[in-house]
Image (cartoon, rainbow, N blue to C red; front, side, top):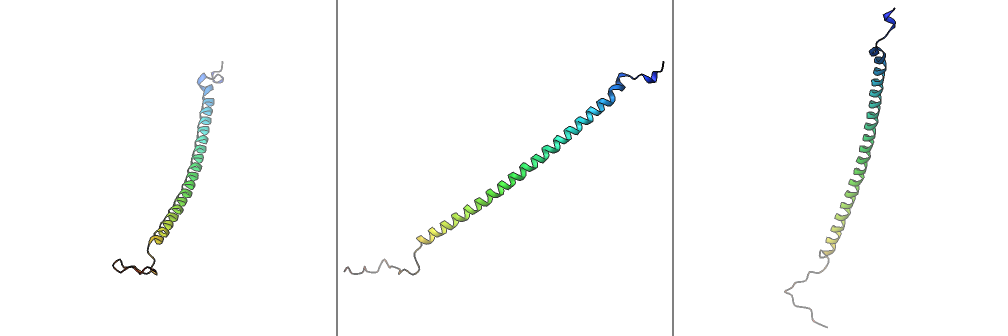
Length: 94
């Protein structure tokens, strides 16, 4: 009887378990790469949204500063207007 023709149980399962482990590693690597790409896309989208929000806040701040300056200018006495002297006598009534 030829013993080389007979294989042991460990020899029979070795190639298939190696293939199975390799398949699992490839599958895990593929999912990890996919997850990293999706994570990158989410971060890029968040960065774009934050940039737009920052621009909106800057525009709002500029508008508020402009409105405050206009209000201050309206309240300030005009340079053309005659200055009244509180010690001067009041004009005669007509």
